[in-house]
Length: 180
Image (cartoon, rainbow, N blue to C red; front, side):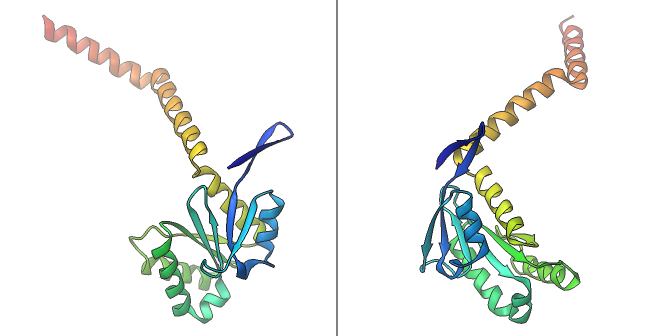
């Protein structure tokens, strides 16, 4: 992972492996514009994007295409799931109406109990933003930072909590009763 500073804030960049079928796609261009190192591969599933540092994989699925050939896409998702442990299906639709929600429900039903997550998105910018955020927050340096901040926050809340202080007083009060 490389980090570069842009106007005082750290900009996160990493290597992204993209299916060659997405070479001329708006999403690959948007990822390149974010300064990610893009590697195209014929050996990954068509429509897939893999953030190697985070170990997160995304399968881009157009809702209209999926509705017309649902069984084919379900097989494709199943294969994708068997390869990638931390996987997301990015379901594109300009509007997520009743048919698209039913499709998401059927996909969730079919893969219930698996580690598959579905991200409904409306456009490429929305998809890139979600994928980048997920990949960034699941990368090791950011995970460590998030865990540290959560532990610090938890400690602060416990120290400042009136409930916690009351429980400590009760505990101290009960100890003095038990010792006499």
